[in-house]
Length: 199
Image 1: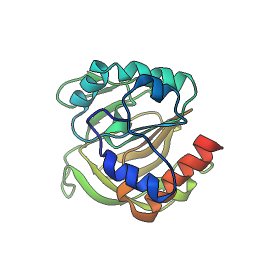
Image 2 (image 1 turned 120 degrees about the horizontal axis):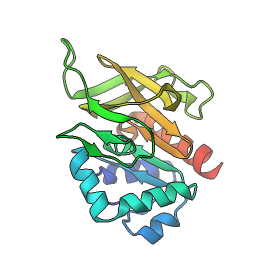
Image 3 (image 1 turned 135 degrees about the horizontal axis):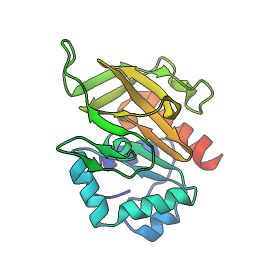
């Protein structure tokens, strides 16, 4: 999905590498007719939500989810799925997964933002994403989601337990960048396509 706030080029390259055709669009009709929607994101929560609301893409995304279209949010795109964020003041999110987004706590030995590889701990052993068990993925973030454990597929430790993959029905989120996580990231995108979208 195109809304001027995402690392779309590398994501499209990753999907092309695994043989999946993608289209970059902000057209509501095209989004509502798609097999799945990827919501990427870099930058600030408040600005990203403002763009989505201005283009009325927040409404489109809720409609798409209501139709059963799989939605995958990546990095900031995952954070936007939640109810609100405290970044630069409280900003409401998409309300697709119950929970809030808050800053990583300052703690000796942990630089903010977290930039680098971190090992996933699988929280839902029967998830389609069980290949994540003990695998390393690449993170760049200063904020993290706080939500009920039933929505957390995997988590990493970075001064606190940080949800790395979340799910509520057909809504999914990855806090890390799968397109920067080597073969593991490619395998996760392939899993999303083959087991969630096509199934």
